[in-house]
Length: 95
Image 1 (spheres, rainbow, N blue to C red):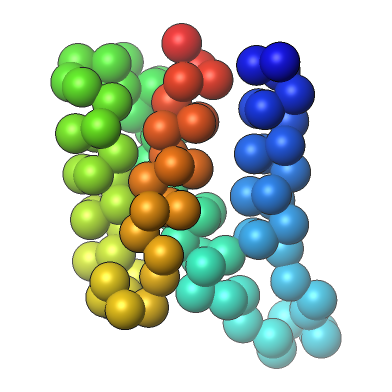
Image 2 (tube, one colour; image 1 turned 45 degrees about the vertical axis):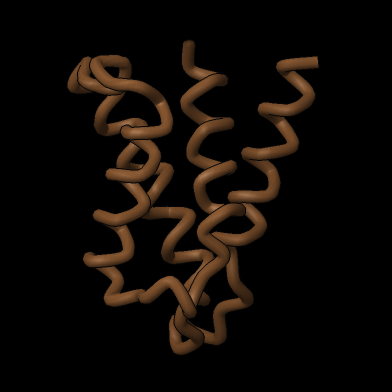
């Protein structure tokens, strides 16, 4: 069950991150950029061995806030509940 959930989440993130590119002229969507940023942040923390220092909800909130700042997004631009769920699912899959 956990593997199916992980595959589903990764598939959703890949689909959200991918775009139909017209010679590199079509920009990625805000959601795609956010998902890519969040995924990179989780894997960076895992590689630095800092992912599991704090409560997963605290880490997810820090990642989301960091990515929102980097991408100049506000809470109105994204679905924060969905973004937090994605981060938590990825963190859980890496345990």
